[in-house]
Amino acid sequence: MPWVLIVLVMFRQRQTKIVATVGPSSGTEETLAQLFEAGADVFRFNFSHGTHEEHAARYAIVHAIERQMGRPIGVFADLQGPKLRLGVFEEGEVYLKTGGAFRLDLGSSPGTVDRAPLPHPEVFEVLKPGASLLLDDGRVRLKVIDSGQDWVDTRVAVGGRLSDKKGVNLPDVVLARSPITEKDEADLKFALDLGFPMIALSFVQRPEDIVDAAKRIDGRARVIAKLEKPSAIRHLNPIVGLSDAIMVARGDLGVELPPEDVPSLQKRIIRTCRNAGRPVIVATQMLESMMNAPTPTRAEASDIANAVYEGADAVMLSGETAAGNYPVGAVTIMDRILRRTERDEPFAQMMDAGRTLPETTASDAISAAARSVAETIGATAIVTFTTTGSTTVRAARERPRMPILALTPDTAVAEVLTLSWGVRPITVPTLNDFEDVIETAKRIAQAQELVNSGDRLVVTAGLPLAMPGNTNALHIVDIASE
Image (cartoon, rainbow, N blue to C red; front, side, top):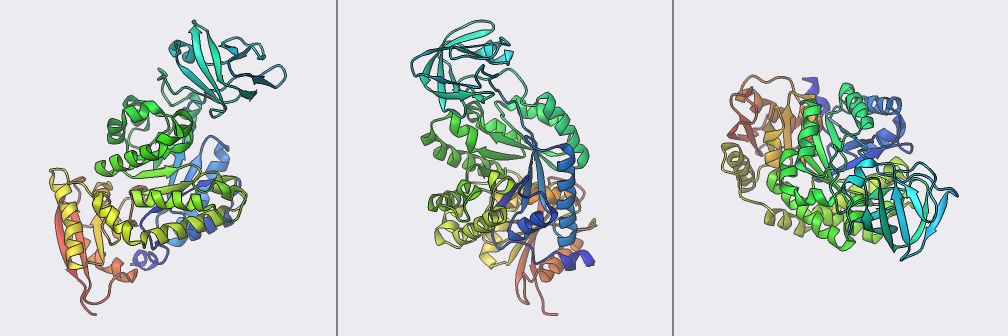
């Protein structure tokens, strides 16, 4: 079977995954191949930038690399979401003094030092006295004093320079609108038609946002909820439960919340996702200094290591690979930090300590037993056969000390599983019965040089194989000498 022989050397010697954002610095065939070889497991396509034609060309390159390397490569489309921005100013910019008065309204005339246009009617519907507005990533802060149907009067809490079309954040209110804008609708259709298996939803505020997105996607892709609004944190458990994966988007989250709150929230989100069996990505400013420098700061290295210790499934590079001067170097160094951290003795101890009791289902019981049995007998790997990915995600939630080989006949499922901790997904032909699964597991483990004579594998699957989400079989496989 040729597919067995080519699926081997490019799997990583680590459990935590790397997401690299594609952009001007990394959009060529040569650089994308170098990013993959350096350690990128998943590529993020940021639809806030670039054209459909550029995304399609880069998507084709990634899949060409996937075919060449003989292993799944994950991709996801990251929708822009609603962006609130000021209008323009008469002079291009103004300086607001702390303590001064400043009005925002729906007027079309350019702004002055006393007022500025804010062309978003939905904002004025919810802003009430006492609410805060954060302008230009929080560099300028306003407090609402009075409000009307199409205006708000504010007091400048923190002054500073303000220029055309700067962003506006509203940490205290929930906008009565879908996070999927008209632009997002066009981008979503394009991404689904192209074949993206995962869609990241920006500025999620409430569980209904996930339900709305899932209806629009209609089973054609998985939903990654980006947590960057305080209101999303207030609905954390239901949002995690409704999503297929979560991203801790620390950029906007750090603007709308006090910076001292973000580290503890990151830990809480990761813990909630692990308990629910949802892959979680930690994102934003992980190697920010490498936009312009060939090496990271020690603080950045510690930040990445902490995400690994906390049990994140993946860590993400944004501008570092999309627009930075050292995209391949950033992935290379992140890979080194991940591998070094996972070799540390406290890492395994923390994974064990973070394990929760399985749910009272046969599937969860089998997945928990697979990890326990594998560690007791010293198995070299856990092998899961899955049609939807649920069997494998359950296995990954257990954080076993050996790799997880995920066998699936569905290419899209294999690509989705590239995001999960410790999982090495492999696309296989349709298998007929559990004996086929066992024999295939043995051949692949041997082809990857994961096992030698006398080693053992733990294999799980749901029987019958055609029934998804029904993990009910566990088998210990002894590797005999040829």
